[in-house]
Image (cartoon, rainbow, N blue to C red; front, side):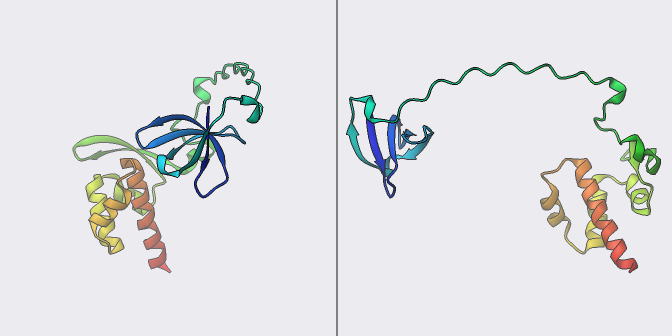
Length: 167
């Protein structure tokens, strides 16, 4: 077994493996394993007596298997559904967007009604006009989101501008 000291620290580590420019080591005090660059390994000494190291921890007992999840009846699941308490505030509408019929669920305010029939590029174009930003900036800002989240965020930004404009 090889014991080394990491450069700039007094941490003693056991060298487990060397692969290319990286060395896998185990901290003697905490038993944590991590990788370091070969250059950060200080003085290396060979130890043949394992008693000089911290006593090995007893192996962990295997965890008991988890109980199976309780089955929720289909009518009680809420995946993608609005809670019944709030359904009174929403409207379900089928609109044609880009030549395709799409189901839309929104609160029916003026921005929602305006955006219902717009395709995503149209929403970006309209938002860029209202917000005074370029379409490329908005696309870069929201490209990591799915199309529904992009529409939602752009709609919320338009609503905010409308509220500020009303005041």
